[in-house]
Length: 141
Image (cartoon, rainbow, N blue to C red; front, side):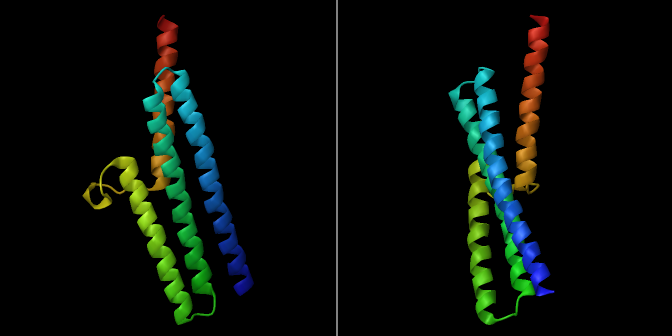
């Protein structure tokens, strides 16, 4: 049974890494689209930074889940619990730092906490709305 949970944890780790890679690709694409729309370099940089941060945040959340699965399903020891605590603490601090960098507001001051996946989805939705506005402008002009 332990082997099955180890495989699940490895799967979660792969998904976490994939989320970061896909987040990077989406960030670059959205940033280039922002540049091609003529939004300017500053706006393209903000899009890149925000979207990349969201992808990293999503990946970190999945990696914490992988660590929890791996630790819970292994033979419990005080050393494993301490290592898990340190890993979760470091990843939590990284997640909070990224959220503050992206939104400019500490998480506990926001009315609703937003996950990395939600932030990534919002970035894609903003890009879609901007593209639709450009398409409507081109149709009129």
